[in-house]
Amino acid sequence: MKKKINGRTLLLFWLVLSVLFLTAVCIGGSFLDETARVTDFSRKNISPCIQYPFGTDWLGRDMFARTIRGLSISILIGVCAASVSAVAAFLLGVVSATMGKMADGIVTWLIDLVMGIPHMLLLILICVASGRGLKGVILGVALTHWTSLTRLIRGEVLQLKEQNYVKIAYKLGKGRWYVAMKHMAPQLFPQFVVGLVLLFPHAILHESGITFLGFGLSNEQPAIGIILSEAMKYLVTGKWWLALFPGIMLVLTVICFYTMGDSLRKLIDPASAHQ
Image (cartoon, rainbow, N blue to C red; front, side, top):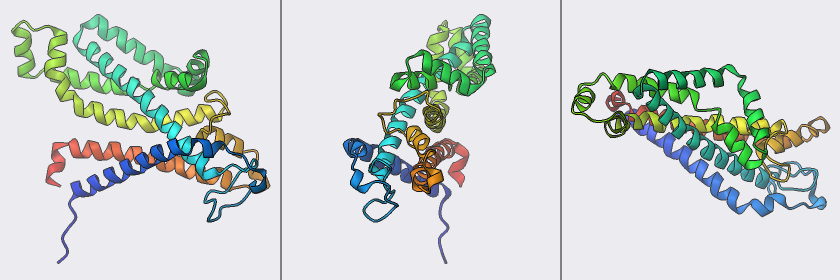
């Protein structure tokens, strides 16, 4: 009789597999930086083969090296931007729910303001105003992805405020910030971690999007958005591999981050212990 695979074991398997894939991309990208920039006109426009799995472009650059390097840059930007955004969301959510009606009103107004502006438009405006480049992209993504997590943290804090141990801490004379950090923060950590991981794919996709439109990273960097933007000019000439493989790898990277976030959420959930 075959033994049924435990649900948590399967989740852990997909989590580890996703982490290994993303780690391999980051490490590989760091070693392929120079290779991704090398041009060789003797090998230009080569279709996918054993020597060049992703083919080469019109300048003879190895598309596999460019794709892996581009993904590593996108992951770096996604991790930095999402981390800044998640920390800001955590602090604003706690402040909103614990520091009185005025603080709650200000944070709620900021959330409504950011969410009321078309997301991509706001992202482009912040990126351009910040000078574009790596700093501008990270700042733009970080300042536009905190709203949903802030609402989630705020809701969780409002529920925790009704718990007896929190009310007792207030009655013992403990300050609001002390209670929030000492008694509430540990309870919010699982939601914060899951929210942080789920911000990564959004950050990566939006970084690639604004770079594709020409408002992100410079053309000298082998970013995925630049690779796809340049490939659009050559698709009509039959160079399908210039966009297909970078696009597939970008989708796989986003799926891995979503898988990590979903797996973490289910593993942290106490109800999943019975699965």
